[in-house]
Image 1 (cartoon, helix red, strand yellow):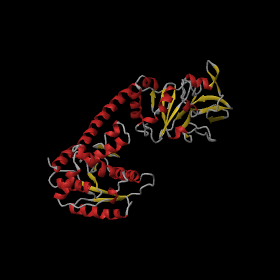
Image 2 (tube, one colour):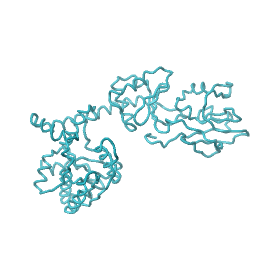
Image 3 (tube, rainbow, N blue to C red):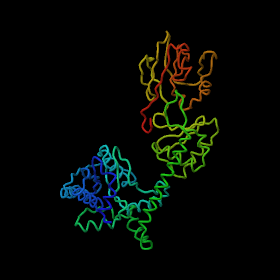
Image 4 (tube, one colour):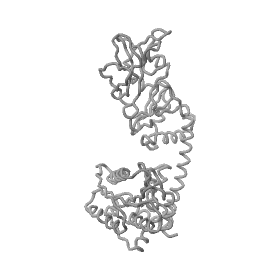
Length: 438
């Protein structure tokens, strides 16, 4: 099967997209992809085609690339958009440039549109080798996915089953010209070293090394899918129903996770936490074991990159952002039947009409007592313990005092207002914290 027929078959699922866009660097691979698609569009009913060139400005030679891309697109009657980006400084310029590039591409991609990149089989083999040498797990060794979500659109790699040699032969057969990135010869960059030294050496002993590595990536992709299905099943059994007063934070049953093997615990947690934080490598999972095995009366926490996993009353809670900071109650009037903002802690309101007195809102300081109907004076700590209020939430529940005495605890049934139902304290926890799913 020739290259054009192979690529056309790979494009079949995306022919109803509102638009096709190509990430065009001007190098061999993206030049071939653009030429292929532009040629196919002359005889096939394809979505509107355009190209995007990201200009990093990291080297002097790159200043000529937008013009080269424009000449190519003009010759093929394909619209081109050049997008300049600023690359953040840091330890890895290559990584920072990649992040800036994809951020810009995502911002440009419209709803349902498809962005094609020209990664091919040799790129996939190099990716697998690079990750293998860094000690990646199953999902890492799956390599680059053929399809993934990018903003409101999709990123598709239609050349992953095509070898670099096929692209080279196509370019030569069609007399194409392309730009050469000088950094591609810098063997201080790991990927270039693999491409120029390691893979050729492997190919002399194992001629099918690229094809075999790509096949392995496919096996790992399937294994990753199976692990995700297992995690989803385990997490379904670990779901817990939250009481009305609890904020809708991500939460799991610790006892359900304890019933699993160590490997399944880690697999379930990786899957659960994936949308919110990067997970540590295998050597740094001692924090999970310490949290899981802490004494029942402890309040352990496992710090991760973007937040903390907390344990309380056999439940796990994912906290991030403002949930990791104690709120401060400002001097403010007690709100009426409208919600009033609490800095860093959502909103509060009083439903109904309060009787005369010196009313004020406060947070727990310790030592508070409350008169409970039918039970007399009770220590607030004991009341919170009885209702299994998580430790991280106790400093956030708004309290209502009158003449210095505790009269209500927001949202706790039976404690949140007048026993006769004349008034009630309602609290809406913060719900706009980045990284949470609610």
